[in-house]
Length: 411
Image (tube, rainbow, N blue to C red; front, side, top):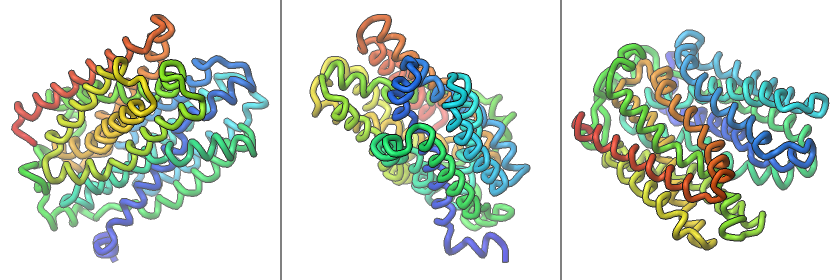
């Protein structure tokens, strides 16, 4: 029986597989809970303790590019299984930090090997889902990638309040490695493709539901890179995601030093940010199918820009901080849920893995925002410059999205 007949009645299982892959990537991504324990145990500075996350994010984004090519040669199932093995290796090595108490050990284990595993697995989320759902692309893809955003909301408190106190840093790394490897390995059996694009042809290869959205082309990576549209898309992604990554790094500190919250209370706004980052992605996808991807992005990114620019002047209480965290959570949800869909609309689905990997490289460059926010605060003693820069960059990204809408006549 072909994949098409086998999966025609249960194609949402592919979405579940993608969700589990994204969830495990997010499980690894929620690094912040290790910062203070590493500071206490090894006497590291916050800059040193957060460096493994920056390396993880950078490697993750870089690997997304060749991973899209590899999945076409290896197949999704085999690539995901390789990622599962690398996740296990990364965390078992990280657990040996007590024997190798050097920052370079974590940069190698968690940063390089873990980031590679995450890039390999996450690159397998959007392409198969998008191929099975030409009729509901936004909703289906956003449900898959939702796992990455929700992971921090659920797993960060588990790590901080249960795993680390009970098992210590070493035991927590081992637990994460085993769970991540098992779930990733099992998810590989849910991620399949319709053979020979049969399912796409059933609906019409070029049609997308929702307004007048149409796939503009079916480009190879080389063809895509030669188009101005790619560079406009890439630059807009870089501009709007910069502030989202910056706020992840500074939100708890801002809550403590500016709003004067306790450490426990300061973690709550970030939890709201993580919750809305994850849970609102399907809403963003559903809306994009109905009003158009670019139209929705321009509205959400404009809102995000205004929040950043007003942040240092009006976000001075617990209530306003939570509201701002929720709105900014919607902003990053739109970015990470809709750019895969936008890439498929602009450049097709046949090479979506590597094409979206190239677009996603903007996210890797945006990772410098975490370090940049801390540096600007150390330099000026204020969060205002970093927040205003984030707002201006987000506004530039919004302007580029609006320009794409007008220039290419797409919604």
